[in-house]
Image 1 (cartoon, rainbow, N blue to C red):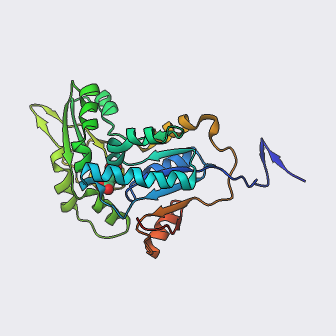
Image 2: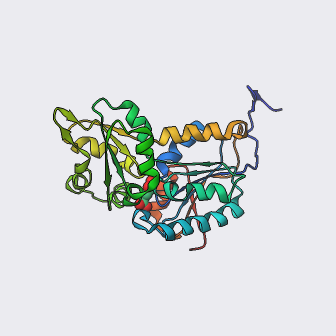
Image 3: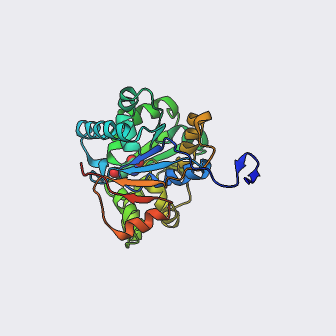
Length: 281
Ligand code: DGL
């Protein structure tokens, strides 16, 4: 006999679902994955990290763009995803449009610096955008400022090493307050009686360091993390396609360097992911 609780059978059905791919260069996209998992508990997720290329914030644009497009040609052919989340500002601000053009049948949810919400929320009019050097350089970022924050003073702060420091911190290695302060200090601006009141975390790695930032900041600010908004956008995009019953397949993580670190597998299992092997690129 089958017990029915609401419309969900008591015995969990095994369904084969098309997955949602969540992509980043490393561990940063996990900040988005955990929000997506919360809002979409039944979705089959595959986390893809191009960690062989990490950190991508320093890559020249043409090489990085063609690497991302090449990687997605393989990923789409192999996994037939029903949606893709580019949980990476550096990748999406560069290749988002080209990815959508190359795969018109698949919805791509992007990550861009949260300049619009910051401009809506600031009281002082002084906003900083903390990002990789690549995101800071992008035309995309500049046009977000022109379109949505022309009335604000927006300071772009590019950090060469924060994504690397965030990965060290996540893996349990020592990262000093001095190192972090050196990277975020330029975000804090005083003009007459006004001070920066919002810092946009425009790299998905940085929310993992947000509590450290709060402790060492020269004064309190709002650290804007877009992860929840991105997950909500994924829910909207999936609409009726969202899974309503659990799948038997575990959520998987694919890392392009094929790392074999037990510590990484443990870390990923804390996010509900099983690390699997894939061929190196
Ligand atoms: N997590 C990525 C982002 O949101 C970048 C990290 C890297 O430099 O590879 O921009």
